Image (cartoon, rainbow, N blue to C red; front, side, top):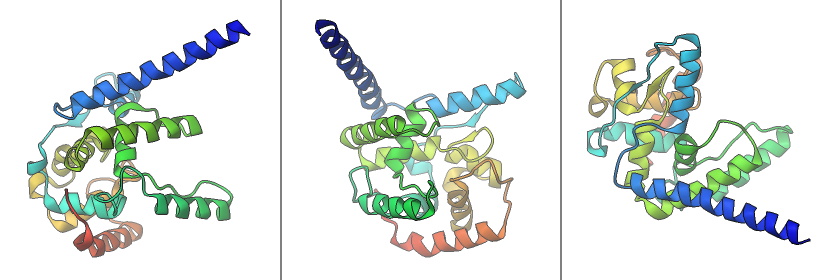
Length: 227
């Protein structure tokens, strides 16, 4: 019985240390920019498995040098209640659960920008309840330690926008040949539309699905509130 008690105590202490490690990084990144994320490192490993000389395209740019159009488009597409929630959109979660239950499988998610950033910064791409729980904890940490503006700045700088293309600056230059601050409304909506599957689409590619998605995003950007 005593051995079980020590084992449980060790597990609790280990979990506490892991969470403290996450939070210490978040506190640092509230002021300083990360050089890379866990997701970027995994993608680089995958790319180098095919080509040992592969590199990622990424360039940090401050919030002020990212197009307002892109900020609005991403919020409209990914997290319409970004300004108002504390890391979780409970209404969207309920709707996703109901849809998944009707379909009998996972076909919809409800991750906020904060949750997506948590996953990109620290976690693996595996789907499990344990990883989802850890994502939720980290998202709460992000919301506690950072402003909404900083969360969005980090998200836009580390989102994947193509095969080995990360962040708004690299995405704007790769897909449209312009800096992130020069993206117009149509270009911004296209980038927001491909976020769920960024490696599926080539530069400027248009499909019926993307056209529909872009139109929907553009119709909602007027309502997107920026931090």
